[in-house]
Amino acid sequence: MAGLCVRSVLVTGANRGIGLELVRQLLGKANPPERVFAGCRDPAGERAQQLQDLASRHPNLVIVALDVTHPASIQAAAASVQEQLKGSGLTLLINNAGTAMPSTLESETPEGMALVYATNVTGPLLVSQAFLPLLKKAAQESPQTGLSCSRAAIVNMSSEAGSIQNIFLWHLGQAVSYRCSKAALNMLTKCQALAHGGDGILSVALHPGWVQTDMGSRASLKAPLAVDASVREILEVLPTLSEKDNGAFVSWEGKVLPW
Image 1 (cartoon, rainbow, N blue to C red):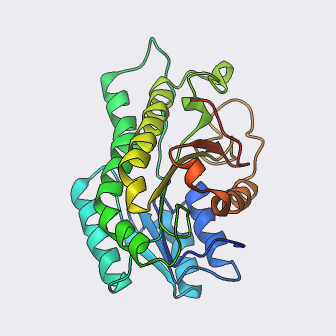
Image 2 (spheres, rainbow, N blue to C red):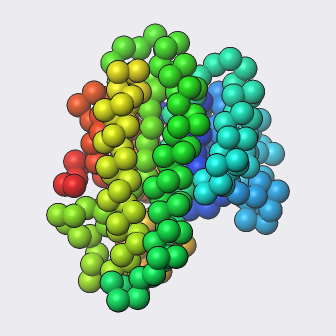
Image 3 (cartoon, one colour):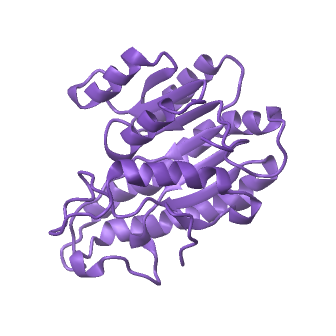
C-alpha cells in the first residue's frame, strides 16, 4: 500500500463482498496492518467460513462479532478491539456493512425504511461513536500531521445511488430506502468531518462503484465492476486523501461526486 501506513484497521460487514475483499487485499499487502479486525454478525457461522480460512493463515487477522444494528454488540466489539490493541489506537475504520431492499415509492414501508436505515445510517453512526476514542488515540500517537488515512480516518462506504444530483441507475430500480439511506450517510460523513477533523480524524464517504456482489447483482443487468478491481482502486485512493477531502464524497477512482 504505497503511501498508506495503517497500523490497524476495522472493516464492518467483512464476511462477504467488498468487506471480505478489503480484508483479503489488506492482508496480502507487502506491508499489511499489524491488526486487521473483521467485523461480522456470526464469526463462527457458515457465512464467515472464508474469513475463518483467512484467519487460519494470517495471525494478524482478528474476527470480531459485530452486528451494527445492535448497540450492545457494537460496544462489546469496541471493548474487544481495545483489548487486542493493548493501548494503541485504531488507525482506520471502514463502515462497510450495508443492506438494500427492492422498493418503489408506492411499495416502500415504514418497516423497510427503518431496517435499511438501521444498517446503513444508524449503524455507522453508532460504530463511529464507539470507536472514536481509539481513533482519537491513533491520531494523537501518530507522527504525521494533517489529515490522512495513515493517521486516523473514518471511511463510510456510500453509493452514488445516494447522489441527489445524479440519481445513479434509477432506470434499473428505485430502491427508495437504499437511496435515502446513502444520502443520509453522506450527511453523517459531513457532520463527522466537521466534528472530528480538529482531533486529527479524516472522514470521507466512498462510492465503490456498481460492483458484482450479492447486493449489487439484484438488478436485471450484471454489475460491470469486479469486486477485486473495485477494492484495488479503493486501496490506491485511500492514501491520496487529505485535508482537502475531509467530508468529501468520492468514487473508487478518486473522483469527487456531487451530493
